[in-house]
Length: 626
Image (cartoon, rainbow, N blue to C red; front, side):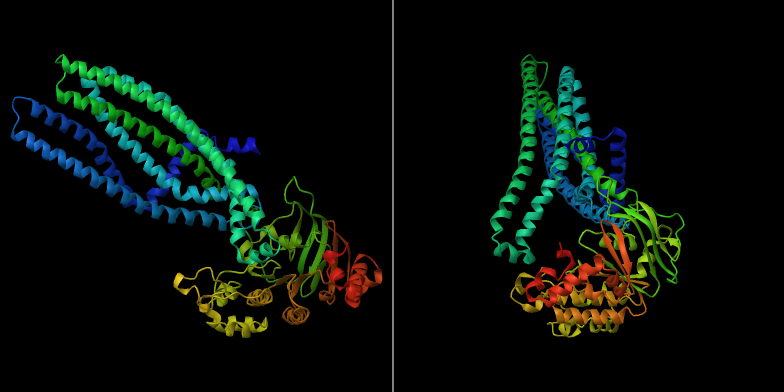
């Protein structure tokens, strides 16, 4: 892991050049006028220091020469004008850069999240390394293009300034120009090495930073607050958060210490060179070889050349570091699809025959064990098929394959005989409705929380309320402070609304469950309805009511049911029992009970639990059965 992370921040020159071009184009397309303004201001800013140095020389020579007078005053006015223009140009550059930065952030974020939306599966989102890369991409995508443009312009400004001052040095002390150039060589090497170390540190500590963020969010999360306080976990998570933060800070501190040492030595070397040049200039002035003005412009030229060189080196190193982190952004934006995309996908027709899994094998990576092993299952159109099994048997994974969040490693899933990999993904999913156990609770209004189930109905009040009525959550929503427009969160309140209950509300778990069901009901007559533990967390009466409504809702539909409570799936047309990634038995409820196999044993255990008061809590869930 560590070796691959170190290698990830060493990019070949060709890749760096390609990233520079991409970042520059992104910045240019985001704000052409702002970029042009910065270019013009940079040229002016590069010329001004040289102009100020020469005007100072002329003023000093005019004051000490025999012909001092009106010309000196004119030169002084010009010198003052250069000083004013320097301030104005500096402020204008900052404003132009800020404006361009906002445009770049908007454009880069749009490209990044468009790329994320093109990932039709779940594999990348469930990969920790991808999560680390995504976090760095979000940071570098916004910062790197503007930094590249800024550093490029900074280098250009430094080159303009340095060219003027080098010309001055060549005219007054050629050997000094050579000495300053030679002294810059180790500076370039050191700055580039530091930039690589800093980029390496960011990559190496990305997981640590993510854990620190996790613990800090956990300590401030309203949902987690109950358990944290009940079990006294505050100090435990605080110590872990501080440990991760300390680890990140120590890594940053090591890089800062190395930079301090290197910069100190380089600064000392530069000071020695500048001091030697100053002594030479003074002796030359004493011998009459240079005028006072010549000394002043020579000193300014030495300082200006060193400053410009240092600026060029810093900007180069900064651009190099930006490109090392920008690589994460480019990897996501230009990355290949996570699932195989058919060159000419077929639009799926309404389901007429059924869905079939043929010898399906699946595992999440080569390092993971097989989750499904040779599964064969048919889901005839218009029937309800239940998946039963202990936790980890492969039920949820099978659902992910039906939704084509993943593709099988071997075998295939067929929709009326057509491999899902040949179908257009978005159109396929438009024909699927689902209620997941881990459904989302969005920080949106009640109307929007239901409407996201079918965006075409987001503003259709009749369809929204009909879905809410079907899920028996309409009355709950109507009683909220603003009805369907009530925010089901309180994270967006204004300071003045802190104590106003109308700002937003929290729903109970059971109420949220019904909102999730309403979201599923909003999708009209899906070809396949997937119900993955749709009544989890509900009380017995609410669970019974939900299942009755779901039976009516899925009547005549093709559906897949998953539940640990076998009583909820006993009326399914077909029940498949999974164990260790395989279907070990299947049939109707009655036939499986008669067979006396695994299903019969689990059903008997649950039935015994409900009939035996002492065993209710121990056997009410298949996942709890040993």
